[in-house]
Image (cartoon, rainbow, N blue to C red; front, side):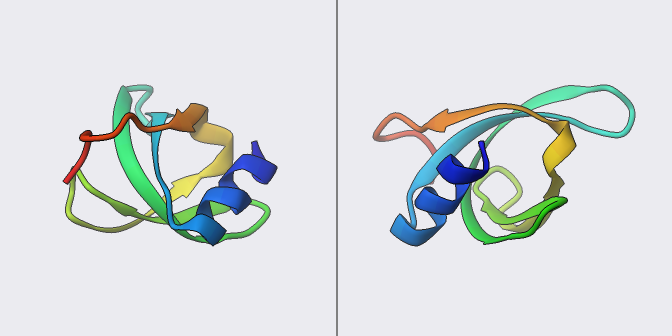
Amino acid sequence: MIGFLTSTMNGKDKIMIYYMDSKGKVSQRIIRVVGLDDKRVLAYCYYRKQVRSFKLENILSCGQAKRGIGA
């Protein structure tokens, strides 16, 4: 997953993630990765329209977003 996130950050691609928050609620987000370390992904979230931090351990899956999805 780290390799995929790194490559999308370099290409400035929109991706879709399924994310579980601290309360166990799962949400689907369209993001653009702007930073990455060993614990967190810093990304622009098109749903919240702001830069957000996502814990790597809480990202359940990620993949390329279909064209036309997001903002």
